[in-house]
Length: 97
Image 1: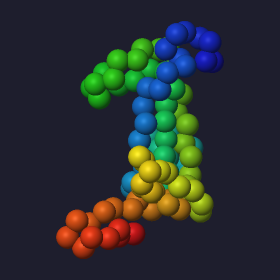
Image 2 (image 1 turned 90 degrees about the vertical axis):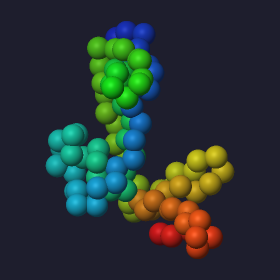
Image 3 (image 1 turned 45 degrees about the vertical axis):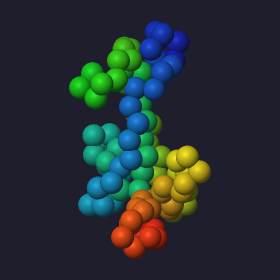
């Protein structure tokens, strides 16, 4: 699949699922990729509406469920842990989970 065309090996989409009402995989990517506590990316074709210009014959969604265990770090800052976004609250000066 990755050798299909030049754009197939490039990232076309990346997002965090943040809908807490989607709680289990139903094997419909349109819903599954929005499940709270997940991160997903797509290899290949991107959405021009998002300002991304990668073109490919494929759009291969990959979803990783981080709810039981997992971390995402952004620029040396813990951003997501065990499926929960950690939000810095300026007024409180601490992280809320």
